[in-house]
Image 1 (tube, rainbow, N blue to C red):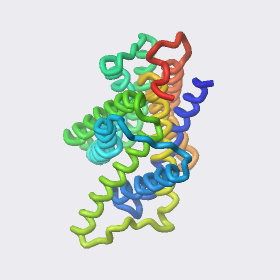
Image 2 (cartoon, one colour):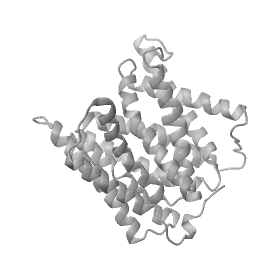
Image 3 (cartoon, rainbow, N blue to C red):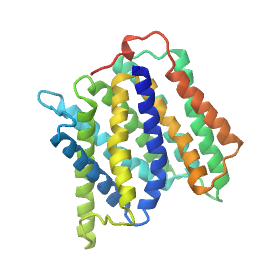
Image 4 (cartoon, rainbow, N blue to C red):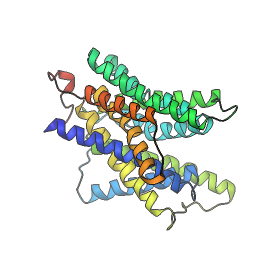
Length: 308
C-alpha cells in the first residue's frame, strides 16, 4: 500500500508539472516572468496559511533546524526558478532539455555520500535509462526546430548547470530534512520564501518602472495562476517532499523524467502536435527506467520513511 501511494504521488507530480507548461505559456501572455512567479507563490503561500489556520495541516517549527530549512527554501523555488528561466531563455530547446534531464541522476549520485544511500547497479541503470530518454526527446525537438546559428550560448549553459546543481541539492536536503520536518512544513517554508522573495523583487522592479506593485491578476490569467499556485506549487511540491521523505533519492526523483512524457501527451491533446518515432522510443525508455528505479526488492534501511 505504501509503495502504491508513492507511485500515485510520483505520477501526480509528473502530470501536474507536465501540464504546467501550457498554463505558464498562457499566463506569460499577460504577466511578466517575475510577476508570474510572485503571483503563483503568493497564491500558494496564502493557501498554505489557510490550511494551517483551519488545522488541515499541522505546523510545528519549534526546536528544529530552521537555518537548513531556509537554505533549502532559497534553493527551491528561488534560485532554481531564476537559473532555469535564464538558462532556457539563453539556450537552444534541445540543450535545455538535455542539461535539466541530469537532475534525477545527480540527486541519486549525491545521495550516496550525503545520505548514505546505496545505489544498486540496476537502479543506477534505470535512472540513466530514463535520463537518456529525456535527452533523446530534447535532441529530437532540437533537430526539428533548429535554426541557422542556433547554438546555445555559454551563459545559458552556465545557468542551466547552476539549475541542475541547485535542484540536486534541494532533493537531497529535502530528504535529509524529512527527519525533522513534515512534508507540509517543508512545503509551507518553500511557498512563503518564494512569495516573499519574488514579491520583493517584483515590487522593486515595478516602483523603478513606475508600474503598479500589485500583480495584474484578472480574467485572462486567473485560471493559469490558480493552476500554477495551487497545483503546480502546493500540491506538486507537497507530493515531491512526501516521496523524498519516504523513498531513496534515486527512486523519488526519477519520476520527474515522466514530465517529458506528459508534456508530449499534452502537446498531442491540446496543440495538435504529432510525435515522431524518436519520441515514442524515448517515452518507452523513460517508462522502463522509472519502473526499474521503483521496482520491488528487499527493503533496505535507506528505503524506510525518514518521518511519518
